Length: 100
Image (cartoon, rainbow, N blue to C red; front, side):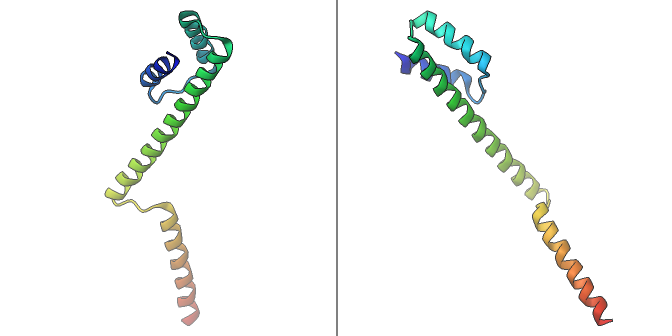
């Protein structure tokens, strides 16, 4: 029964994170409806919070990847690459001045 409730709630929450207050409210409501023990309720909330955090991290990673792809398609150069080229140009300019 608890697994069914957990899966249903996870599906409903998706990538949203639960705040501590919301978690406590949810725990209270679930305990009342399905008569969970305090320990079972805490375990359920902890699992839901962990899953929500994991989903949030996955969503952030996907967003980061999509931004990188979009930047690449638009011809943007990553900052690290730009900085490396700027240093190389500065070294070459210094060598060129030394030869003049």
